Length: 180
Image (tube, rainbow, N blue to C red; front, top):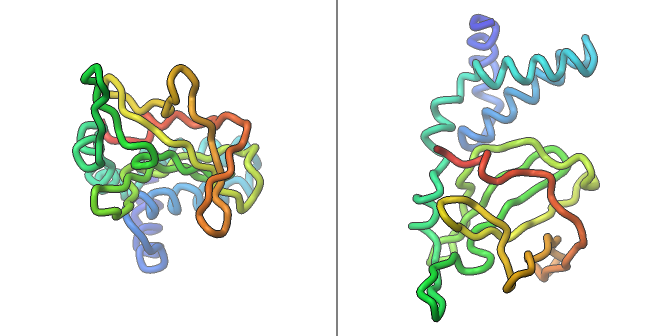
């Protein structure tokens, strides 16, 4: 197994662009897909688990994926009249497609960056669609942003960047995507 992954690393290193999280995702999905074509869904799932454990990008992803406290320090925050601190709405969000999910954070200067590893997506999302969910940080956990007692809805963006609320939940736990 280790030799297969080492050989694969050399082959894919030149063709896999992006950061370590993206490379980790591409190696896992690529090898899993190949196994699935040959052996079916069971082989796909077993290979995905095995490759995730032995992926050559694991240590780099652990270094790049930020911890929740690091995310909280990099994004703008507000304090309400009771003294409770929260992330500015839209500064941290879960981004989900039908096959991939990740967390983006926007710092005070407006720069947005991926601050998590890539995880599985939500298969109920239409191919090509991107769904966003604003997140807050509460008690050291990423939580859905709330407008009072009500959770703010997931949304898609139109071509001009406007938000279009959608009535659906996202089947991804953002806390599993960050460093620990």
